[in-house]
Length: 477
Image (cartoon, rainbow, N blue to C red; front, side):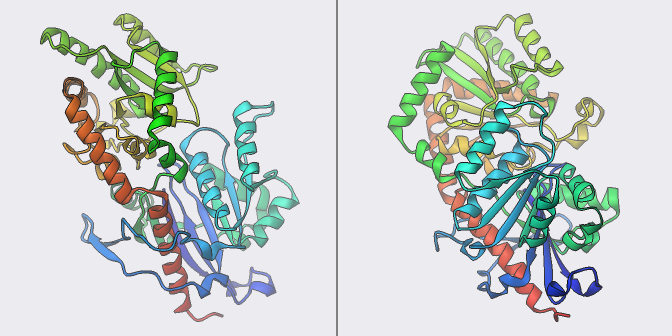
């Protein structure tokens, strides 16, 4: 998640008289290479308290990048200053992918402090869709008001909103399609006007700084790094030994595996960028290593959660064909994509985070091997650590800021070069129960220290308050 913050004067003449003397602050949140959220905040927040003291680190170009405290134990509702504010959330689609789900999480976080939240989805299927219906019902139950992206209601809400959030670059098309000539009254569109950026990992921040410089010839604004955090609901399950045992038994029974079997799982949308193909190669190679070395280990299984059973892609067909070719059908399990990951985290023994890059181009990996970026952050990684699972991850992207190599998990190279190292790491954890348990325990401790929802809320609130505080230093026109 990344956010761009902007200060902009309404004195240019395009704002209605009632807001001529107000300031707008804009934040764009980049959830991936193609994902960004735009937030507009009115100066009504100027009464916020000053932000807490900040720490700094220096990035690769010797430019200061601000870091907010990783473990803050203060008020339980740091975003309480958003109470009674009106926020409009605009999503390019409503699905189980990262962009929409993170935007929904923001919606629930704001609702918890009394914010009035509206939601519109730009691209919706013409026929009834079970996933869309389920997610809209979930939002409705939590008090999020869902309505059409088109029509006067969307325009009126945009004008009244204290905050507007666009969660992807695709969602930005809504501005031209619906707001049309009113766009300048709602969102200043050009990146050079942005005054700051909030990004979910240092690696991603560095990537966007280089990308904007190389592709757009634009210097990134001041950057704030804000890591994500696990929800209270997930932590409640992760810390309930009885619930975990019940879930473990249920899932393992449905998969036809025994309690003593060892399960390595990838829980991500099935795509080349997530590295399921390389993981299966590593898994097969690990089985060969165990056989050659005559190691005694329980039966090992690979679980891939994130399939789409209704519309199997060419890539997933490749995965299934590989499994059949290697005759490991009894060892590999494909699970349909789901919003509920806790049961699978309770059932497995090791999480594999094998993300390679973020690109829609199917040949990106082979054509540009030097551009591997891994996961921007990797929410599933901190969720797995909450369940005291060790993580086998690529040494790239946000994973390197979450997993402590050799302590909470083991890292391997991206690309084909990482296939054998990952295979060896699979064998290491399969043959050493105590190592698995110790890494899992340390991962849980790291989550409690750094990656809880209240940590994330404090960091976001600190950034908003600082930006709003800065606006006071500018004379209002």
